[in-house]
Structure formats: C-alpha cells, structure tokens
Length: 320
Image 1: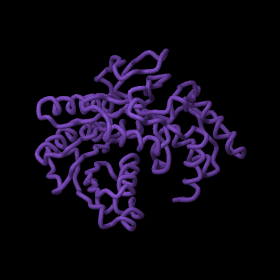
Image 2 (image 1 turned 90 degrees about the vertical axis):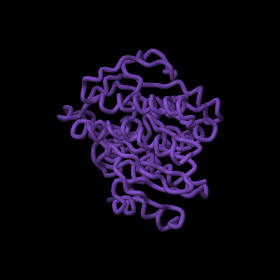
Image 3 (image 1 turned 180 degrees about the horizontal axis):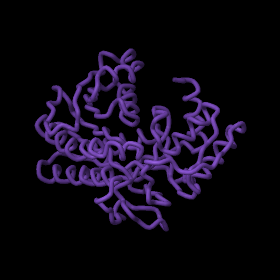
Image 4 (image 1 turned 180 degrees about the vertical axis):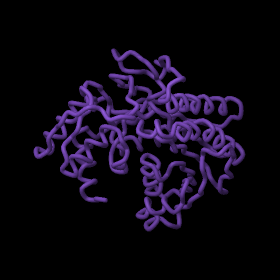
C-alpha cells in the first residue's frame, strides 16, 4: 500500500505518517518545505528512509500536483487548525482546504487512486445548540463574513468537493470531523488552550486562563484519533462524514486546568485578561455523537487524565 499524506510535517499528518510507516506502508509526504519536514520527521527518516518520500508543494497554489507512481490512497491533512493563525493568515488558512482539496481530488482522479480521505473539522457545525450531542447532520448557521470563518467555511467547501467528486467522478472520498485532538506533536506555538496548559505544566510555568473557563470540549488523544481516521479509511462509507472525538473525556476549560493541577500538584492556575488578536470560538459546548464511527468498530480508549499525562511527559522528555 502506498499512501500520499499532505500536512505530514504537521500534528495529525505526522502522527498518521508514523502509524502508516509502522504498518509497513510506503508514504509520500506532501510538504511546503522538504528541509523543514526532514528536520521535524528526522526520527522517521532515520528509521524508515527507504519507505518515506517527500514532494515539496504549496497547496495555496492554483495548480494540480502530479502524484508519484503507485499511490493507492490520499490522506489530506494539511491545514492550519489553530485560531492563532486564522487572524494573521486567513488566506493561507482557507486555500488548502478548498483550492488545495480540489487540486488533490483532481490529482487523485487522474492517478486512479482507490481512496481519498479529507480531514475536516468540528468547526463545520457552525452555531448549534449545546443541549445535546451533535450528530453529523446537526449543522447550524455560519456567518461567512467573519475572519474566523476562513477555516470553517473552507472545511465545509472541502467536504462539499469530496461529495461532488465522488458523485461525478466515482472517486471514493471519506470525510472525518475531528473535534479537540491533543498529544505529542503539538507545538508550543499552537495557541490553543489545551496545548498552552500542557506546555505550562511541563515547563513549570503557571497555567494561565484568560476566560471564565466554562467552555466545554471533548478531548481526544492523538493515538485514538489516528486509529479513528484510519478506521474510516478502511471501513467507512464514501462521501459520508464521521465525527471523531472522545465524548467520555468531556471537560470544561476550568476542569481541564484543575485536572492538570491535580496530576501535577506543583502547578498553579492564574486568571489573566485575554490577549489581543486571538479569534475566540463562539461555541460554549461542542460535544459530538460518535455512534456512526463506533459502528465501524472504533472506540476511544485513552482518558483525559492519562492522555494529558502522556503529553506532558513527552514534552519534558523532548525539550526544545
């Protein structure tokens, strides 16, 4: 099996690449800078160099890349996922999810690949009720005339393109909507609150909360997320979205901070005013119904306490 992975130097893309290589597959990684990607994936290059190749390409380009010979499936995971980057780079956030997706779908069609997986987002749900778990059909309105919409609207368009390509060209496309995924591979610069909290604890700094902490999220450890993504690719229905999250690990932002303090008693929590420039989420509770993915045989197994402990210990073992 030869797999083409976009965003392979990013958080989910790198985790997927690592797992695919561990399964004995050959992977071609689409990256914007091969030099930076080889540095970030140095361990994988050293361990699996003969089965790991690179294609340097920018999915902001309005052009169609040519896939290497023998590619049988494509995983499109290239996307900026943190609101920290939506503000300064809305164009670079939007284009890989829409123009880039169209280019990859066309490349996959020309290469006659067997499967195409689009890594979407829970942001596609828009303004929805927080009273019940979200099914894949529970979409709400989304204002496109806001800067934060560069991410959610482009993910919606990416999904629509996948459905269209499947209907018109017969390309088997698969759609997964991850919610809040965390773990080794997230960077200090990520900017999302769960990453900030983990790095603060690992580095002996106070946990800084800049909101009232009431927003509730379902946190999914990266190993569970990778297993879920590959389950959809292996067993899912084409042109059908699947929620990917761990609703058993639902916590408010404040509860997450308190959990980390309980796991690492030397930590402390501080309340500060919000920083400028961060585009906050309008959703107070974003919890999914994952019965569609569970029906394929996938089940999240790692609790929030265990997952964040693993994440923090990884940060401490790999300081920068």
